[in-house]
Length: 329
Image 1 (cartoon, rainbow, N blue to C red):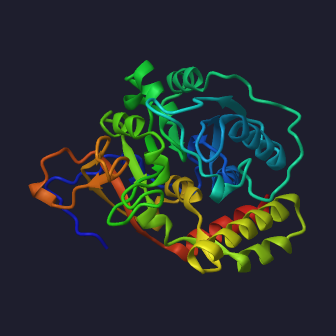
Image 2 (image 1 turned 180 degrees about the vertical axis):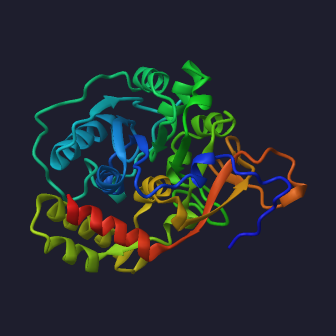
């Protein structure tokens, strides 16, 4: 368990201490589906009260991330709105991850064309309007942070109204996955991430150091296939595609299921070990652009303790919750 620094490390996220097994947290999911984003939507449908979905370009192009969110909405029978967001970062060219997620985002999974498309092309406006209409929502971004940064620009007061911004991105005590230093979601728009981490919002970072502990693969795929349901079949296909990638890249038959961890950090925070840390984003480094710099110096840290960082978790319980979400869908 990471060392605590009680003099300076008061939690930035009071919601992390307010778990109630009988109450589902109300969340907005900002995503770029994406194989593991699709898994996160399954988890959110089961364990959260999903208010709506916003999409951003990231793993694949915006037209595909939006279509995939709509496909998952229909697969799960969700009555929520999907709003299209940013098609590129605040600065520079868009980075994609086709090699991980396939040409259109869902790997080898083929779902029917959605009968209902996006409800608007103004994700930022919808985020502002929705968080004004209802305080205490959890915003869970699991892709590049462009939409969130633009929403905070449009309405800085949002930081006072949301219960948390719990993101999948970055890393503590860990290497990157798109460069030696940077995780993909932060690297894809470092300027947006920098604005979010400096915003004063109640932040929780679920980064690679945590998500690489939560691994699923062929064995889980085979179990999902026995459920005999469309969602079980879809999850089995997603996991098989993921497994193929990780066998080729890491010679292991399982892989980290990154994005569902951010959902479960909101719905089941008691399963995670977190500590408050100063976290900043490198936007200029030749070799470190997109790196989340987590200050582990405790009382000697010079920056504010602005983020709850996930360090450890009950991985078996998290995988069990993911499998139950698929089984119950």
